[in-house]
Image (tube, rainbow, N blue to C red; front, top):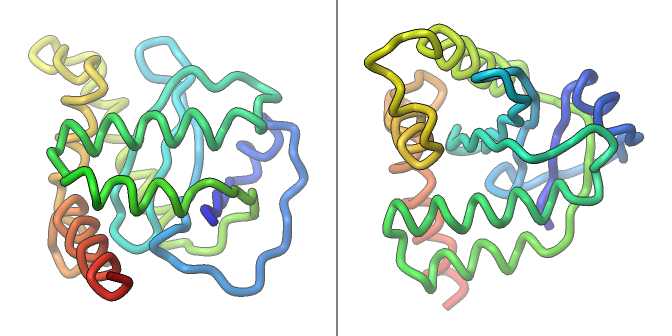
Length: 171
């Protein structure tokens, strides 16, 4: 099961009441927030364990029911861009068939997510950064930033390493 931990403004935008979750697996938990980029509303999903992030548009107000499917489509496309082996991608995506929306619970993840949003907004006006309009380039760029909470490693590296370890444990 995938858990979306939405900020208060995101819960209000989606018009959904959060469920209370006792115990969560940080590898399948994603914090969610939204902001405006290039004049359009974008949702930022950030994995609690690896700080992997996806910046997605196409989710409208009151569309909580579509949150999971839009997220999975974008994650699957991003995994293909990163050339993550199909068996690993399918393993993760199969575990994401059920979703729950809860409240945020980690200031560390929220801070990292806000940092990503700030950097994208800052670069929005830069002429040489027009490439960041392309979501694949934007995702790769964001997921190669180094963060202190993950021991100064790249989010994509942390995510793939954990994905491989979990797949190997279950195989």
